[in-house]
Image (cartoon, rainbow, N blue to C red; front, side):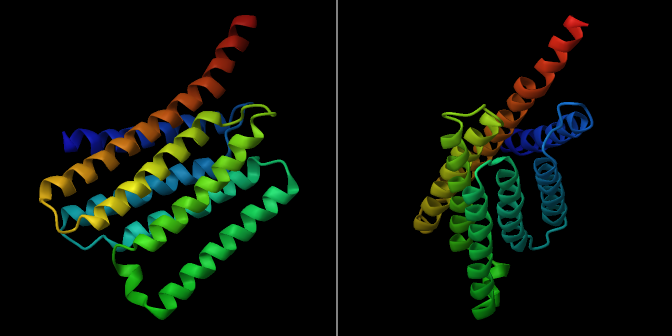
Amino acid sequence: MDDILIYGGYILVVLNMILYTYSFFQKEKANVFFICYLGFLIVIQFLMEVMYQIKMNNLYLTNVYFIGQMIFLGFFFNDILNAKDQKVFVKCSLAAALLVLLVQFFLDSSQFLKFNLFEITLTSLVVVVFALLHLYNMLTEYRQYYYITVGVVIYLLASTVLFLFGNLTKGLSNDIKYLTWALNAFLYLVYQLFILYEWKVSFSKKKCIKKNIA
């Protein structure tokens, strides 16, 4: 079951990368920052898998993952938000979050080499705020990247809660820890399905309509 969740997530993110890259070169261009984000996910997950297989410590890559995720998704939302004040807010929030993390790593460099719950919470919540801004805008605007945005909110909020819960239950049985990990893997799989559905709704459907008209 665990292999299905893990490798299912791997397969979906690669598929999404291929589909969105293909759409980028069509008239209905996919967002370049989101494509870079998908590529980043693939690289990090590949490195983590390789290091796991050769029994190397890959824990520090989780920090690279969450920081990179915040940066790429921050650029993504900054690009699709229309209001100038919101764009300024996104840029300032990214800079502030990175500065806070830089100070933390400067004061205690070991935080970068281990499971950093503060970093995970900070980077995830920053992105959730960006996503909620975009959802708010879509109440009166065109629904651009709606399903991706919903997926980001659900995945990052639920994943953060799971990490916090896991940290509070260190002394509990391995079964509880495994359940937390499995739920997070499942959430990631669902997140990738949201991304895939966004591609279907926003890109493939348009192509089919145009072909039928032609």
